[in-house]
Amino acid sequence: MAPVFFDTSAALALFVPTDMSHQKAKQIFADLRARTAVLLTTSYVILETYALLGRRLGPAAVRAFREDFVPLLEIVWVDPDLHERGLDLLLARSLRDLSLVDTVSFLVARAEGIREAFAFDGHFDEEGLAKPSNRPR
Image (cartoon, rainbow, N blue to C red; front, side, top):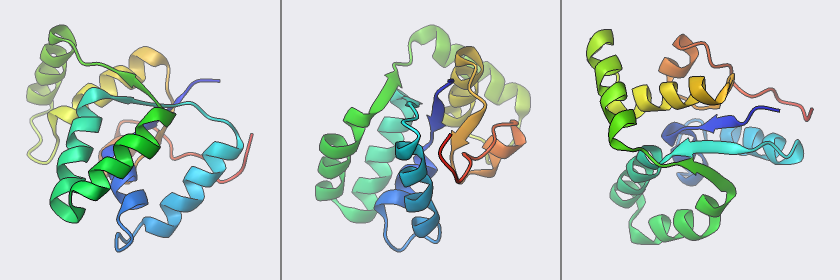
């Protein structure tokens, strides 16, 4: 079974109780755990998540994410080649609200044969990555 891509938007929804997708994120995460899905992400997603959690909730949230959640993830570390290919894709798409983190994520998802993304960012839908189903497989 291919892994499920894990995006910053899912991390924020899980860790920020006031996020409008918090309950849905908790449900999806429980379903993914029940089906023992591998959650794959990139070092850029981890970096972005640390920055946003730190800004929104403070260092304790960063520590909790690092200690309790990051060990559950399979991480693809972004190297210079992947960074440049992500930047090329970002510039080719020429969309103001698309980020380098997103385009690198799309490249990794394609390379890994991933068809599902635990994400609340519409760019993943546009990329053809389905939301995880709500039932164990």
